[in-house]
Image (tube, rainbow, N blue to C red; front, side, top):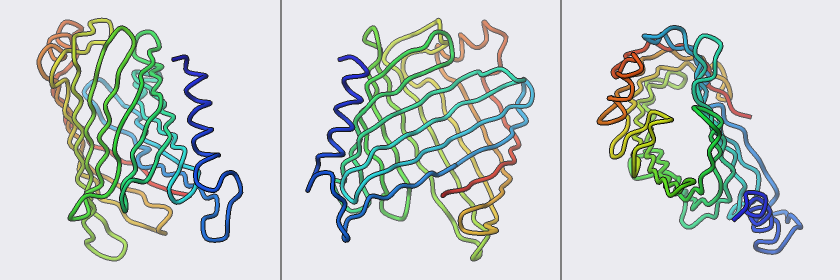
Length: 235
């Protein structure tokens, strides 16, 4: 399926779901932009700018999601991706999502079909689990979880974890099959307002298996503990 066709289907699914285009008083058209992370990291290879942003527009049950994350090292984009997803609420606080992911970097651009589940698990864990099918039969699975511990009304400690797994090796992108990489983060933010919070923290990254071997061949680190400082905001 061509990307343009899938995008059109996603938009049609949102616009014509439920009662159709017209917003009603009890189900208005809403939207939100969440800058979850916009931060500087002190990495082994130099200063690194990292971002993780997502937003949505839609109704209670049906939404269009836009997600982006990536990294820039020494003024050069090391990784960057953009996802466009149609989300359908399947349970309270849970969305089933289907759409496209486009990788701009590393290497040549690559497109994936994306299918996932995002929501709030018991004990207030925010969970995002997505499976990807890429060009040439490549497959991947990404698991993310985050928890917010309120130390006070404004001070919040947030542990996070992300796992990436791949179905086969892709040497051109430095990706190995199986468990590819693990990222653990711990960030302490102060909410000047609920919509705006600076934070500090630590981020640890570890590569495994063939992904670690590819990194060593390029003279890159396979284990990196980074100090971070950044902002979190939503609109």
